[in-house]
Length: 465
Image (tube, rainbow, N blue to C red):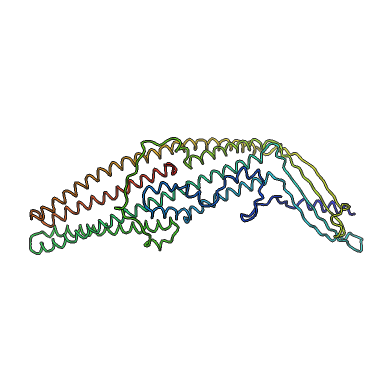
């Protein structure tokens, strides 16, 4: 009777779920991770925030000689929510590697099963106490599970390059938005002068119209010019407010605090960056998107190898130990102990063509990812060349505009002398001044364009410029 009950109990226990011998540790706990796993993944895991600052290359941002900008870059690195999500995504891939690595280890479980048994035609029942222990291990003789862990690790390594790309992208957005806000500050200042001068012109035209010295049509044109100037001023202020809100979000602050964000003035910024004639190929192959594409090719190759190994048999080793007794006090005695050890090899003979289809799918995926790798290489070269051309030609264009502005300024001073001599009217002098303010707006715009081009080159080179 005891043998029958014991066999029934064993069969019921075999249906239980097992648990890994090595549980995933908490971050605050002592690290009991197997050394094999440490050598493969742990040494590549980032800790602290220093690596984030390395991602954005703070030395590059110091070239602008703006402490406020440097502070905003560091603030964005620590507080931007997109970057926090990118870091968490990397951590998710890291845990997936650990999860896959658990399949390379033995699986074991232990339980306690008290049972009250009463057989037919028996007046009384008996308590039975059982403590089963199960161990199962897939003997990875063909290294299939090992390759799956390596494949998961490639995803983790690729996610780190995604994280780096996110930090470079956000830093570029912070710098670009910051300089565009400064540009709008200057343009608003100049536009306010233009509106003030147009108001003076309109007031003078009204007086001259009453005296019959100016036609009504000219007065209406002066009024239209004033209204257009005010409209342009409102548009510039709207753009600045929107950029301030965007900038606040980039550095992890509420848009309600946008008005309190301090910044330098355009006149304080000096643009004297040297644009290289060419970029080394070594810089191109260090771009995060290029390195990610490389890792994805390696992963696709591993996936093809894994699909091939699915045609090989699976070998399992299993062990069972059962302490079974009617007395709780003698639960661990050898008298009531049952144990078994066995192995099995399973080779699927017919799966409806799924293994063949999986292998062909993995091969096609590999070819597609390989083509994307080649495309990424060409795209990287294109983006760097485009950035170099834009930076070089925009700088030359700014130099020509500066010459034009200097000529316009000299012309205005000459006309100031003519006005003092009484050879031109005040209306003419104000018009010459507006020409000067207009060219100053163009200078401000092109100066910031050159800085933004330099940031684009920073982004195109993966912050390695």
